[in-house]
Image: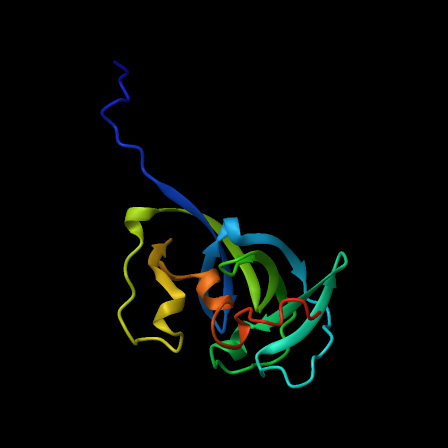
Length: 165
């Protein structure tokens, strides 16, 4: 019998964190395809106000969602460290790429599952359905977001227009 057999393995999950309006948020790193510097996107007429437009990512056209606008946060001054986090999202039928425009990259964290706390209901401008939970890292509160729920809700949900570019 191994000397480590009595030690229960701590289950951890990796999260990529970013800054948005001065607060720290994080997403499951397994959803992240890549991080890109901000580049101008092509505006799509009649799209929701929080969709900045679309960009060509190696031949695939992907929408870019301004997370500040999506959450109803102030737009603030033009940010010099602004990035786009490209996420691979499952919409219930297939995977698709989407970009999130955020203020700045922060860090990647290994977070123990038992250190994730449920978020109190209705205490944030963010819909409760988009929040996995809260955790504390280095004495700082981090809001953990559910990328699939966030990017498959409302107008972002893939519908009968799957074949429209």
